[in-house]
Length: 310
Picture (tube, rainbow, N blue to C red):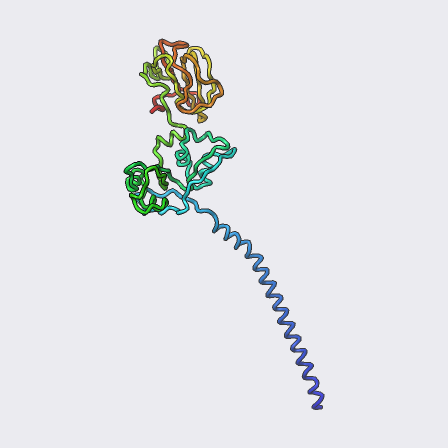
């Protein structure tokens, strides 16, 4: 009897060991599967988080200089060269590089920022601001005061050790500097120019029982007549009492009319820049002497040119 009981105990021990091994193995498999499932669910979120961390910073225009401490702009601020592609606009390019359209237009000395050409090369600053070429006697503090920005910002972004550590002719970045209004209007193609220099002999408004739809500016015959703004010539020819007439469409609802010309320098369909010669002063059509009749129309309604000219 004793020997029989002793022979059964090893069998029971072996069965218990097998059951325990199976439980451990099963739980291990379940744990591995659970970990794999958690990893599968967490991996996309982790990748998205990494992508978010790698997103370039967005530059937000700062508050006025008197209301803030020095900004210490990003040390990676730099000027890059960009080749314009078909369909690009000044706003698209500025947004892509973290700057603003006016700064971009001023830096590239544009006469009409609405007329980008594919293949055109632009210098782009990757933050809002301007470029400045150092003149003799310039110091950082004076430049900062002139543009309403902090000296510390200029020093930081240009790696300048001290305010007088400048070289004549050196080009420096002026972070967050704002261009003058006149410069902005010129870059946008919205700054108006007198077509000729002379005396106004007839103003806009009632005249001789009718309404004079422009102003008359006297000038000697043959004087070049300049485009007041850039745009496209939509008419160049004879038109009744206007005589020889050039009409320029500025693509913003405004047109300029230049009448009584002696001869033309451009033809219909030509693109012209601000200040470009359109023709020459004459006395064609209904005219009492050599002069330019200038009209500015908004949606084809004549407006007083003196409300637009500087």
